[in-house]
Image (cartoon, rainbow, N blue to C red; front, top):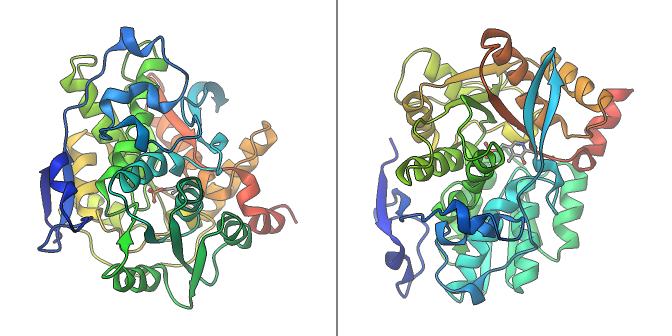
Amino acid sequence: MKLIDTINLSSFEGSTPIWQSPAGNLLDLSFEAILNPAVIANRRPNLWRYREAIPIVEDKHIISQDEGFTPLLFIDFDGKKIGIKQEQLFSTGSYKDRGATVLMSHIRSLGIQQIVQDSSGNAGCAIAAYAAMANIDCTIYLQTQTSPSKIAQIKAYGAHIELIDGTREDAAEATKIAAQKIYYASHSWNPFFFHGTKTFAYEVCEQLGWKAPDSVVLPAGNGTLLLGCYIGFTDLLKAGIISKMPKLIAIQSENCAPLAQAFFTHQKEYSIGETTPTLAEGIAIAKPVRGNQLLQIVKESLGDFITVTEAEITNAWKDCVAKGYYIEPTSAATIAGLKKYIAGYPDETVISLFSGHGLKSTDTILKLIS
Ligand SMILES: *Cc1c(COP(=O)(O)O)cnc(C)c1O
């Protein structure tokens, strides 16, 4: 089992920049987030309105496109109005910009000139975009079968691409080897990414009038938003703004559901099993680096896992586009899970999201509509 070491902000500022502990463990960051609703109310509508809750010391290092504070639209699903954060509206087309703006600002504060990263596509797009803004040399490792539109987007930002003819895990292994020499801007290892994705929780809470929802339905691949939400709601609890952690409901594709399988059988550690391809390519992670941590936080929140079939993903996607929301098929997996969840809990305040834009996956969508 991967262990987690928790360190403070100044420990990241040594002569050798770190993204994992010297023992090879995961790192979490201990940091006191300051949240003052009266001050925040007067700030620009982007995620840096929570400035004192984001672990970047000096403003001059911030790399931002005024991202965040996405609309929370109440959309009718199966006769019930559900708050859906419009995370497909970020500049690079997915919520990964939340993590990228904070992680790349941290990287700039360390004076790093060169980074590597691996991705199923969207995290690569976000890191490449913010690396371009920061003028940092960036190489993204991808599987050969990555969606052509995501490869094009990453290249367009000027990043180098290494195509790995193998599994998503092979791409991750190749990146870890490169990361022995070059800084690893990983969205699964690096804790600064989660201190960006956590702003999703702040925004949800603020947009509900500084109240927590009963539950939040989220995708679970590497769980970057799931873990971010846990951190964000924990910060809000500590600040005394909310009094209860919402239930975190994690959605996996039935074709790739290592965490759900472990959760359903009450295991503390997941095992790597058989997986098959899924329309939800963005959450097809057979070996999530922080998988056991995700099992723990979902349990602690009194939440649950839900798996969805390919037919359910397709139907949810069709339902969304028929309503005028052009989302990528990965995002429809979360909505398919949401539909299952609200059928069982009709009286709760439930929040979910559109995680990525449809223009990301023209190739898959052409197949879906033919
Ligand atoms: C990254 C991503 C997800 C899932 O994210 P994890 O952090 O791997 O759990 C879901 N939808 C889209 C569009 C994404 O880009």
